[in-house]
Amino acid sequence: MFKACYSQRYFSVTHTNSMEKLQYVAQVVVEQSLAQLVDPGDIDPAILRTLHDPNYVDAFLQGKKPLAEMSSFKWSEQLRDAVLAIQAGQLKAAKIAFNEGVCANIAQGFHHAVYEYGGGFCTFNGLALVAQQYPDKKIFILDCDQHGGNGTAEFTTRLPNLFNFTIFGLRYGCRDFERSIGRYISRSDGTFAKYEQALYEAFEQILLQKTDLLIYQAGMDCHLADPFGSTWFDSMALYRRDCMVFEFARKHRIPMMFVLAGGYQTLPELVKLHVSTFRAAGQFY
Ligand SMILES: [Zn+2]
Image 1 (cartoon, helix red, strand yellow):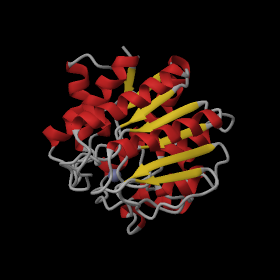
Image 2: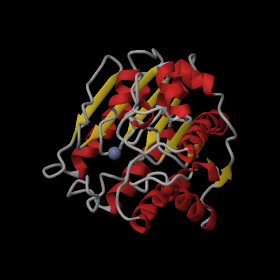
Image 3: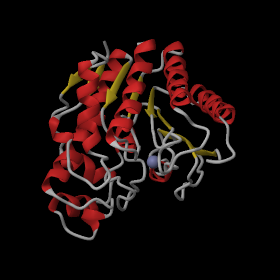
């Protein structure tokens, strides 16, 4: 059974279920013996001050508005502690993935956070964080959230070992850079075949870049019943997407770490979708 980072400190009350869902996903993952939970411990905030503008990091740590609420979440000590625990989980999961081939962090990658501040329910960019802490390793983000990973895309201009491939139905201001590629698939006129094409393109890039660690953002806000969803993306197609990614990483022996990313349906529906990613991983690990 593979490992997944999680701590009760990840839980925080928000208006979107974003941080609440983590607890329920972790609970079902354990009940169904899909992964073994690992508490990631703490992160030294000094690490975050080198990743983001130190003024922004300090404002968030101290709850100083408006910077502390740039993510659109109301600031609380509970939210702060959850965000810090999740960032510790990003680093722990990366370490385990390097050693054991695979690991999850039952959290978001926070792909909208840019250097200067957070945004779109994202506080600190936990994907860029891994690249910063492993400067000698090539870190490739395959971002399958419904929203473009604009924050990670911008971070590729600051971190030469960070690569980003984002497949989205909503651009969210995401631009291409030398090491960041975006592929838009229409929410109404797209097809899963087009999505698969984009995935194959991403796989090609992952191999071309001689990736040392693949981080997969298994977003569920593309699901057809999600308020941001694509009409043609059903639960089976999402499961198929997840299987394709895990099968590819396993086949090429590329260490892989995955995170949940977005999803905005009611908790029971959403938890089922996120848990299916763990089931897909279990087919190959
Ligand atoms: Zn999203």
